[in-house]
Length: 588
Figure 1: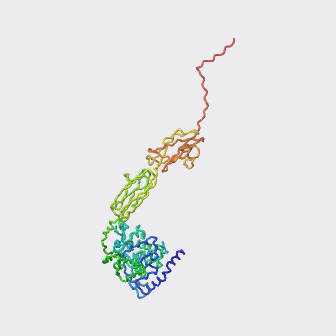
Figure 2: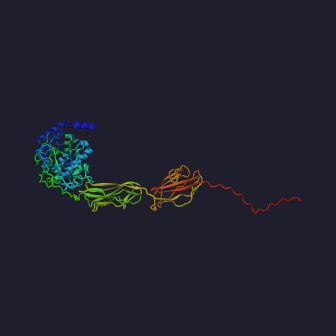
Figure 3: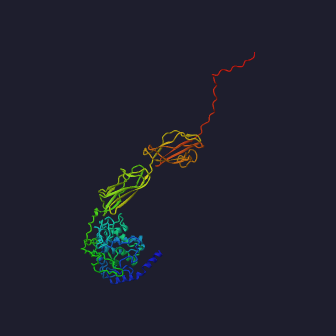
């Protein structure tokens, strides 16, 4: 923190004295324009002013250097309440800021003070930029949520009197699919809004036409590159990053000083509207300087060879919506109600199914137009990507569905493949700048909720022999045959199968060595599994074999190793057919 402060002090040391003297002179004379900091870029080039272009937003102006109001504050500025009896405490009409607009600026100041306190963003700077860019949202013409109604759009930035910026948003924000236009109360061009847009009012949308969203986005944009806006040089660089024009900087500085000396809240829709916006002038050559006009209607130099078109009278509402007629004329923008704005998840739940089964959940998306309403008839292409073998119903990996009247499009049902693992479903809609949503999905192993022997025959073997009868089991899931289910067979000591057994019956592996656990078993098409041969070692006793399946089903089978009883050989019965033994002759 100390190093950061020292860096700030070094950076502002050469400008602080000049800036302080300038502001003091302005306050004493009540001049209309604030003097620039001595270190600011006379050419309007932030690099000349020491601007860091390495990070977001400083490699191009936030507004695309679009037109802005050049009206200056009145010579007699409002005084702070109680400091003079000659000026009313409320100030002049120009000092009034519409209630919603003022609330948005102050909320942005508080938010940035929490997330980036070293920036020291003053809300009066946001008010000055808002005044110059849109006349405080055309005098506070916003709805109850703070959204400008109608939208505030600048002219097409087609290179004819303005910067050339080709479309970057497919017309989502500005309704123009050919060139970009500055949008909203703070006049962001769509490409800058894509990087800096904020949702400050908590409605789930980042809307450049909403003053709360736009004010916070502007505040964070001005604070980029570790700027400290309490330093005159940093403040100048921040304003120049918004619009690269020293005339613009002088105008913003004037209103900034004006608002710092006092302002007041007025009802929405009653604010004073400036006169015709300017056409940006080209930056003068380095060293020539640039003066600012104190007249309400300056005559800027042409931005392109051949001069600039003469602007017509301001349209009702003003605020950057008036533009000279370009030559050739720009294409008529698509109405916001027909312009594709965003693609959102329409409530798709977790995508998970067992191998070979149909997914219960279907992928659904919602298309909205440029003003956030559901948009019908938008083609949405859904694509399955991954190696699980999953397809949409009908065997297709890619399908296209148009959104209905409610703006939603739902893909066909998914059929899980036989290989377990993860895959993705991608939804793409829109041309020029397509919107994309990606959904993660999983195929799990087939499951069984029950497994049992197919017979009840006792399994007995003598020590050192193999069991004569094979063990056959059948697995089911919801009372249906569970084919392709993985089964694990383990010799255990207890019925729960917590403790494995290291003696007694065993299987043989491919090398003929004893193993007491098998993990490569799978049920057949009928849900049955016939176990490999089981052998007994020399230890007699009763042993347990536990079979478990994917899904948690299990069965415990008893195996007995017992030597057969030995029996004595029986004596042969006498032969009754044999001739009787002739007794020996006796002597008389």
